[in-house]
Length: 347
Image (tube, rainbow, N blue to C red):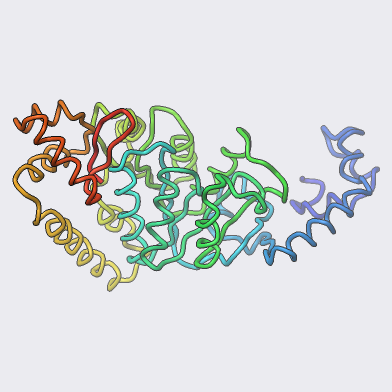
């Protein structure tokens, strides 16, 4: 790149003799760079961008923080509009507990109300919950894809894809038609972390994409937050590992807001504390009409543990019949969820 003063466009406008002067560049690479079909591909890509009412944002018009990372993208395909708010990324496992989903939604909503734009990868689980929390709070959100803009992955998120475009943007570094694979996800993850002031990991197994994103964030000088969970819950193992390695433990969005206060307006900061109080009051009201047996079961499930019928019966000292009857009512009223394993968890 030293031969072309850091300008990638100059590479494609060069002749063979100039390219041969670059160390490490051989005939194969040169043939690829000056292939006459490149222009046909470019025209086709431009047509696809226009047809999908998308845009291609190139440097230096990318979000400022993305330009600071070690390997910034040359440009990004964008459907929708990238918000001008400060960004916070929320990531986590594709197989979350109800507790994890609830935390991701609440945290995304509160951070949105505080003036941040939520970033994630539109994957199943925590990513989806984070985007939904931001949208339900009336704010924008952006999703970085590990595939081209013309591919919705996972396919069940087609409605979420459209909602994100209406309020924010769906973004990709990859050309149209590029499918997601093991190489594209890490590339996507570096952008999820790189664009934001901080990354929040809600739930993560001992290994996985969320930890890769957290590592990128640390390398990029971003703040890494982690939500603790039960020590016997596999989906919290990754968060506990991050906390042991120096990530900031958080109990709610307020902890994130306190650390990121310089990026916020004072009235937004105060508003978030009021919303946090309201959430606590709403949770109290949610369970006020329960009978004694139902309240006992809710108390046992409030710690976030998944418990079976027998375990709940033993802990509450209710009979199996009483426990089953109360759990059925709680499930019908969407207070608890029953898993195929037969265990119950608080929603």
